[in-house]
Amino acid sequence: MSPATSTSQFQFSNVSVAITDYKGVLGSNRLGNASSIHQGPADCHNRPGCNGAFYRNSFHDRVALKSFLDGTSRTFLIGEDVPEANNHSAAYYANGDYAACHGPPNFFPSPARPNDWWDVMTFRSRHPGGVQFALADGATRFIIDSISMTIYQAMATKSGEESVTDP
Amino acid sequence: MMQPVIRLTMRPSCTHLVFVSVLGGFLAGCGPDGARVAGRVTLDGRPLETGAVQFFAEGGGPAVHGTIGVDGTFTLRLGNASTAIPPGRYTATVVAVSVPAPAVDDSRGEALPVPITPARYGDVSTSGLTYELREGANTIEIPLVRDPAERR
Image (cartoon, rainbow over all chains, first blue to last red; front, side, top):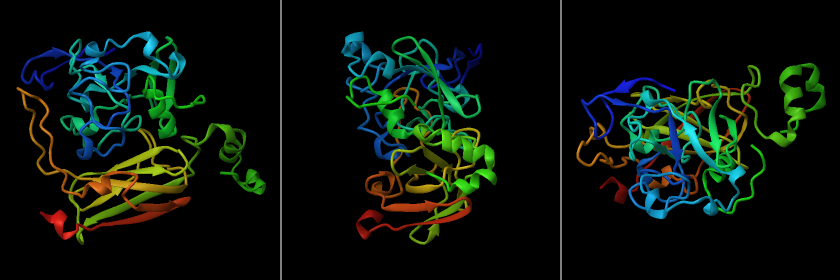
C-alpha cells in the first residue's frame, strides 16, 4: 500500500490527494478505442455496461455476485497499479480506482506517459515479471507477464462465457 | 514449442522447463534465451517519431510491447523485467497519436488525441503486420503506408 499523495491526478491537478495502488478491474474494453495501442471491445468507461467487475458507472449496473457467470474463481476483481505510471490513481474516487485488461500486465511506456490514459489505465507492479490480482472468490493470484492475452482478457470479464484453464 | 531432445544437454535449465510445462504455455524469464527484438517504424517512408508497438503471439500467447523513439526505433519488452521474447509468429500493431497529446483537462479530464497512424494498423485483426521472431537478435522494419484518403 502506498502512503503517498500526488498533485498530478486527473480532476485534482495542483491538489494533493491520496493515491491508490489497487484498482477495480473494468474488464477487457479498449479504453480510448483507436487511440489506444491495446485491444478489446469498444470503450465503455464513461457509460454503463463494461464487461468487468468495477468501473466508473458500475453503480448504475448494480453489479452483483450473481452476474459473475464465468465463475468467481475465474474472474479478476482487483489488481495492482503503479500510480507514477498512471495519473488516474486518486484513492476512493470513481475516476481513479479502476483500470482495464485491454493491455497486457506490466505495460510501462518508457519514458512514462502518465496522462495518456488510453494506454496506461492498465495493471502493473514493481514485482519483476508479474502483477498480483484478487479474484472474485477472494483468492489472490500472481499473474505472470507472459500470460496468454486470450486468457488474461477472459479472466477480466465477468460473463464472457469463455472457457478458461488456470493461467 | 517442442524442442529436440538433444538440446536438453545444451541448455538444461531452460529446455527442461519448457519440456515440463507443455501445458503451461509460454514461460517468462527462461534463462537468457529468447528473441531480442529491435526495430524501426516508418510512416510513408519517414521515421514515425512517437507512439507504441505491440506484438501479439499467434495461437493465444503473450503480448509484448515497445515505445517508439524520435528516430522511429523501438525495443520489444515482455512486461516489466525482460527483453527476452518467446520466439514464434507474432502480429504487430502500431498506434501513434497527435503530438503533443492534450494536457490534463481538469473539467472533463478525458481529452482524446487523434491517431496519426491509420486505424487499421492499430487493430490486431486488420494490421496485416506479421513477423517471425527467432532466438537471438531480430531486426524488424515496419513500413506503414497511408492511403491518399488517410492523409486527410
